[in-house]
Length: 360
View 1 (cartoon, rainbow, N blue to C red):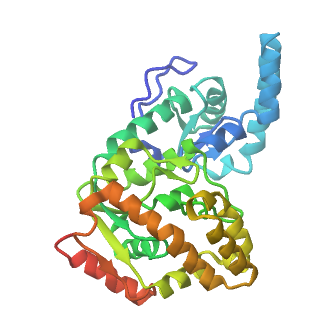
View 2 (view 1 turned 180 degrees about the vertical axis):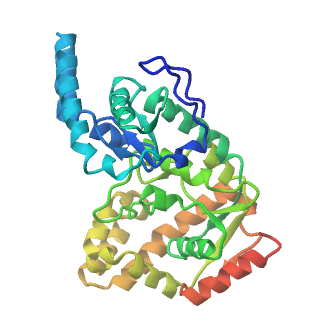
View 3 (view 1 turned 60 degrees about the vertical axis):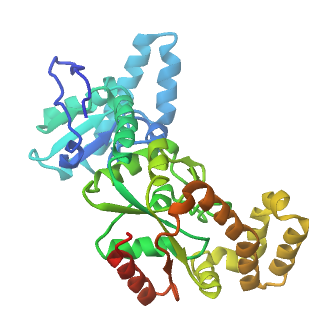
């Protein structure tokens, strides 16, 4: 990373941070307000805001009419907030621990933290250009890294065990990029996880870059076929293109196993099938009123296994077939992995077949 050449308040150039430097810090402090931190931050950074959201707004309003008064209020809040963190958090570290501090542009908020930490005796770096420069680096990093790897893409209909195969591949020492895990979403209308929110787009980008930085370009990276969006989150364009240029391995599993997987991985829909069908209402133009009415009937009767199978057969399977043919064409099928079940032993054997196949 080349953060630029901004100077600290005392004229000292901040240390030039390289891509591997973040891991070398004992503590990374995000000095921005909580709402800025929630939108995006360096993975692993701790939010120690110089001013909280309400204080930030107050200072901003004051700044429009009286800058001196705004700075007076802001510094008063900042010193109190910094003091509140000295004993519970900062006192855990020793002078041997190196720290990094950043704010939006690498200005006043991060310098307030840095000055106090240096007074205590810590070795502190400022991220020149702040989060704004970091965000630019993330975008550039995703573009560069996305095209650097050789991917193997698992595809197949809903419930065939693609995600479980990725987990088994990881257990057997393979490199895996689990996009749905990073996106906190399983894709499709039914992919939202109960009680959990997706990260923002910018935070997803940060998490994705962090994951990709941990991969070895000399080794294969396994991932699951995805649409351009996972829930509300967009995949980087270069990654999406590279996936569609890569070898594809279709996965097949018996319908009974796929239904069992739905019960295990979507227990909230097994418990409340009518809520699931309500989420499928937007599909009415695609599947027809009769099919949707049939799903409502199955849900009301509690015939969950029949409902799961019908949803897969009447919607997800034909949808996935069309999407795979459109996006991967003849490359989908050079090697097909058939799984007799989706239990641990069968998945382990399936991965061994994948890894021993010359077509991988």
